[in-house]
Each structure stands twice: as structure tokens, then as C-alpha cells.
Image 1 (cartoon, helix red, strand yellow):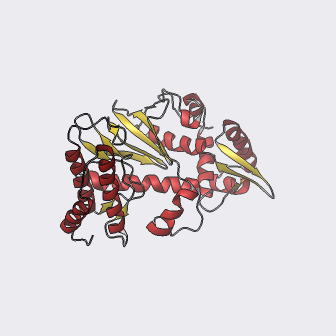
Image 2 (image 1 turned 135 degrees about the vertical axis):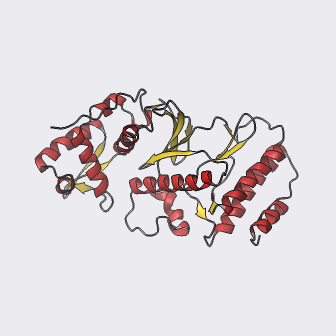
Length: 313
């Protein structure tokens, strides 16, 4: 007898996966078991054949085929028919597994209908925890193309021969969560990490505006120096952002700042760490120069920071 997973507490329609919370409620333990088996099979296979799904799940093949038909109808899996019949998870299916795990842990009990932020490789929603806390729920959507450079120069997928969007998205989320834990512990101005599962990272919700969109700051040079001070602190904590710009710095109402989006971070010990650090600093200084018409000595900022860190600019 299967056990129905209780998801009634998900109050809002999840637009990113384009089905309602009640579709989640209708999933059984065996449905989730089959989804998880496909997830495991996708580590080494582009499409997972029915025999392997049955083997991993421990369920009879005929029964697995019935479950797969249901999951395919719900849009949680995609079927491939060629020399064999195989399946992969869709983004809906992977979202389902991640949200189900987070709901069971009480990390989220509700999620906003629409994203409050979208990037090339992620969507951010508002969520609510079992303790009524408002949090940010970031869903990673990594692709092969975007990670090609990461594989080549940053090494965090370099040890794998087979890649899938599933694996890359999960790895991006894990990397970001681990980075935030270290930075938060070292009191760097980043959102507090709350939890993660698969490709989803849950953090403190920071109410503010992207640096790119913020109204004219009362003291732009002070804000610039706040950002650069946090970049320096992050390096001392062992991390370089690697892609810092005006779109992943949040400015709060009191003109405090938070640095977001850390999946591509590199270690301060990485051979190219100084290159990425220099680029991050230049990106931020160049933005303030453009937006505020300031005559900033970029080389002096670089020299001072690098000297304090014992680096050669």
C-alpha cells in the first residue's frame, strides 16, 4: 500500500513547474520512488531505461510502467523511444523532488506564485518556513553551455565525464550553499543560508534593490567601499566570488549591502584567484564610475586591496 505525501501546506501555485500544489499532494510514495530512481540513473545515463528504473526502485517492471505513464502525463518525466524506451526527469520532476524534501523538513511550507528575481541560470521565489519566517528560495537552472567554462578553468565539474543539467544544477546549489555557510560564519555580508536540497537553495530573504537598479545613493563612494571591504573579507575567508557585478549586490533601505550568487566561487588558493578577484573589483569600480560619473582611481583600489592581502596586482 502506498503512502500519500502530504503537501497541503504548499499554499501557492508553483509557476516555475507549471502545476499546482494539489498535483504534488497526489503523488504517492511509489511515484516519488520512481522519480528518485530516474534521478539516480541519470548520473550515468542520458536516458534511463525501464529495466534500470525497476532495478533501482525495487518495484516490478509492469508496475513501474504504470507509474511512469502517470508521471509522464503530469509532465514530471520525459519519455524517449528509440532502440529502447527510456526516461529522464523534466525540470518539473526535479523541482518536485526538491520541494517535497524541503517541505518534509519544514524548511518551506509555502512559496510565492511568481519569482521575485530571475537570472540566466536561476529563479528566486519567496518562501515561508514552518516558523513563519520569510525566506528566499533559489532554484538553479544550470545548462551545459554555461558550465563549459566552469569545467575548463574552475574545476568543479572537471572530475566528471558525464554531465546532465540535473547534476550541474545540483552541484551549483551545493557549491553556493557551502560558500554561504563559510562566508556567513566569517561575518561576510551575504544572506544567511537556511537549507538546500538538490538544485534549490533556501536563504534569508534580503529586502532591497539590486545595485544596478537602486535610486541614486546618498554616499556612493561609501557604498563602493563597503562592497570592496566585503570582497576583501571574503578573500580572507577563503573565497573569491568570481562573477561580481551590479546585478548580484543588493542595497537595503539603510544602504547596507549583501553579496549574492555564489555558485561559481573559487578558492583563494586557486591558481586563478587573483585574476577573478581583480575582475570582481574592476567590475564594481567601473559601475560606480559609469553611474555616478566619479573619477575613481581603479588602480589604487586594486593596489591597496592586493597589498593588504599579500598579492601582486
